[in-house]
Length: 494
Image (cartoon, rainbow, N blue to C red; front, top):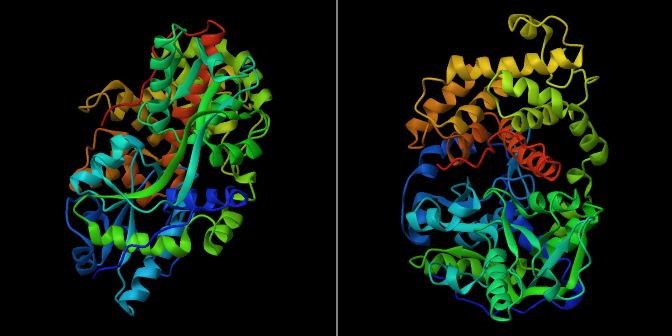
């Protein structure tokens, strides 16, 4: 099947905000609320397999694999097992578009979703682990040398500076000299900042310090750190910056501090998939930014911003400061990174000792009294005992289930956290499934977490990922106050 390529028309300026939908929706590539609950399970083996080819082969296989970043914005699975997120709306629409063209009836070609961190999007595409990247990818020259980009989802995108509440004023781009900017090294923003540093050096201005954000952080994660005052500056695409500024009240978007302009956001395919590219180009004629579909999808997913709000940030930070000594004490006693431990407490209860769950879990670490008793701690209604019981239980989990496993210390912690949430038996089963599907059973990120997303859904994946994110946030707080006394956990390589 061949679809003619078509030219695209850039949206007018009033439609720029609506571009958010077109791009973000593609980003997420979420799944469907369908009457086929086994969709993900049925495609498990093909998802992790390696295959190269063009649209004709995908039609024969009856599947197109979309590489998507797993996050609350782009792609996630909710408690009911439904795939959700902004990109799903667009990839779902592309599936309908393609099947209508093919007149497939009930024998549809399905879009299936392969969650992956951003640093692996292009490598996995080229390795044949996916067929299309749906991830709000900026079309840069370096990337275009490796992959083929479709017609743009959004044209004339600008990368702009975003500052937090504690940042010194920025009137012009030269004011960034000597400043610290929080940025993912794999992003196009990093390329732009590196180029600006070269310019600063040539002009004998102080270089910026580029503080690396973890590779699996999305724009929202980075801007949360900025809004909380943990870092001063970041860079974001202008339409995303405008959206997050509505959600996170302490952001300042500098529309006049532009690091890249005239950029395009697009899908990416392998160079050996010209027919798939042509089909996507044809689809984008009626589904890109500024179209009715794009506008409606934007309104549907992004107008209500409550789903990304976290209330009481200042209150939680104050609790962190008050509890730091206790977490340091028990972190040292049980040979645990106290910042990771306090991040777990934040995920469990927002550091609220008065928290009680419907299942009977108590306090900051949300332990059942029976579990605490097994750990030799009696009264977990008392704050110190509650933290002690949680630390002892996490250490026990590591020693009992992961001490002798061939994994590094960071992954022992990650698997122990997953077990704390989902239970060690379930985690053991997911590790076995990961190994059977060609994934590394001793690595959480990019490997066993994929199985968890499919088998359990959103809860455990977000539990571990959130703790990792909060760990980064609390590290930044602790560094600013001279409290860091333990090694910092880094994103384990897979």
